[in-house]
Image (cartoon, rainbow, N blue to C red; front, top):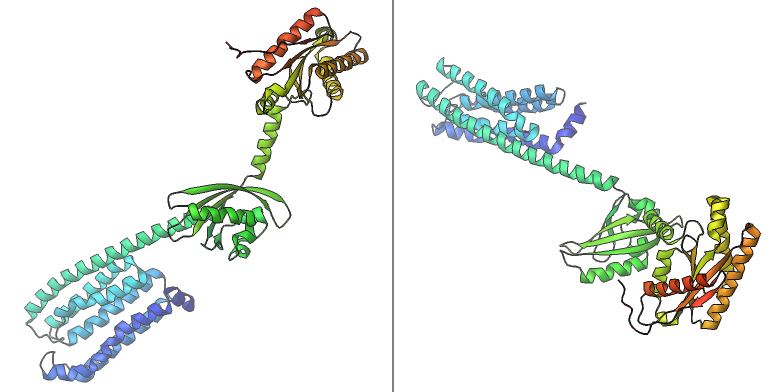
Length: 470
């Protein structure tokens, strides 16, 4: 227990305390000269030597015993021993009242060991020691170089100064302790944030070696933070990432940042995606923030896929078909077949929606198998479908439309007792049109085909001027 407490205070602190109180015996060599010059009282030299040695010895014993006591008792033992031993030395010289400020040495030493709480016990025991010393002066047991009345007045005034010094030292120590606690609390807060954050925080040197990296790196690359420290960033994240960081380093300023996204392969051969943000520090190092976005990107891709796919048939939906037309380099080489089922309403009303959904799924499959490779087939909604062909002339588009109609008629014959066919409107784009306008012309052609009877096709007249939509 003693050794543990001594280690807590620090052997260096104990050594400093002993050095403070060992300066007394060093003054022994000056005592005879001071007495011959009548600068101190004529107290017998052996007695002064005993008192000086006893002062250092008593304080050394107090330091040793302090470790065996509770913090409060140890503090009182230390401050009481320092005050009383100081009192018998300074009062033996005859200068006790004037050297009262010397008690500040013991208080300062206690503050260094015990902190700001030591100033009150230190001042209290100093008051006890000073009162005791003045009593010995009053009854003639202790010498004084000035008259007793003056000694008492000087002792009182210097004690006021001692109180001010002790209070100031205590306040300064308290402020330092509060500041240290705030700093440590802030460090602990940010340390916990970094250590338990899912995101990775890394410090990268100007030569792209990892100086620090948080524990979040382990699930991302399969390595512990300790094994990552000192590695080149290319060894850790791959050389594509290292090249991006090197390029960013040359362009980054202190108030700027760069964002990247990297594909990573960890030590478990798992493919991961990471979003990175780089910030440059004043010393030239980089702060690298990494976030694992593998699941997020997978979810986004899944949502994007669902948003572009018709849930019933699995074909591209209207939005996906429109996007495909928007991405087409030129609508002049694009022909669309607008397909609307004939007789499907009777099937749906007579057999029910569940059977009708099955028919739509089979029709979608028939249309897909009836078109050549490279033709995009999708569902616009309800019983309307669309086929998109590139570089197709009228004859080819008409042939494909008839194949689609034949496939739908076969599906109707196999799945229902009701006749089912399709009407197809064919339109080729022009440079004046948007995808919506092209679809509108194909839709109008489909209605003309439907008006002529089931299983017909109709070709839309090409627009010769910009079409104004309302």
